[in-house]
Image (cartoon, rainbow over all chains, first blue to last red; front, side):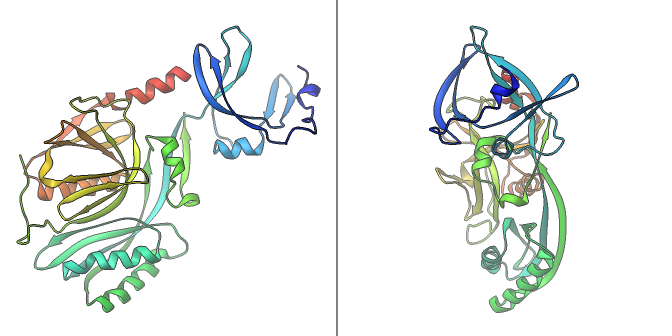
Length: 204
Length: 134
């Protein structure tokens, strides 16, 4: 196949992105897949070849600039070439988390305070546990939702606490960088918490 | 084994809400690889741990927890909660601080010690699948 034929535009009768649900047998393993037909460009550069991946695929695979991937040619049983397997490695989720650590009295109103904060800010998690005489200690954490979110949340929490009759004994803002591996990538992708605020780093 | 009551009203008065990944081991088996991990929101309230997502809702009462273990794997620490009934265990994984805080809460209401177990084979299933494709 020459570069010219590879770059042939799709016929006018076909829609630009034809999507069919189909299967493929590679090395005796059946792959159920969505086959996507997209235009691409193959470019020669010295002894190397550049395959320019369409933006739809880059988006689908969450590829970033200078990201290292392992490529493997996969073939069908009869030896015909079937495609390139792109191994992206292990996805590691990295995100900046902002939190508010509190100590309040009385403890039975903490839940209501957290619920009010959750209605206004993108809350990741909260926790509280009893300490001392009718007091509760805990924290509430938010995604990076913009400039000074934790300071703003602190002011709002103090305002709402006044309305609820809660006394703040301690309120401290903090931030940290969280890092973890989603064990089920497809399930994680379906339900991304906070969407664009989460950074994904692939490690081979 | 078992749990202790902290409050006069019978509640432990602890509250937690966090996104976690959770998996349930098959009935009567202790297989830790090739588990079906799901994303869910974990709530701790009224002496119960509730895992809720768009297709399932699991409720674990504190009194039904017989053993708590911390598994160390290449992905980080995970918590394994063995249920006294049904012969099943729940595996919980999430952001490090979530696991640490969850451990802290569990140690508050549970009599049983939290055992630290090194288990490198936990992600073996996933690794094998990945290496098959390589």
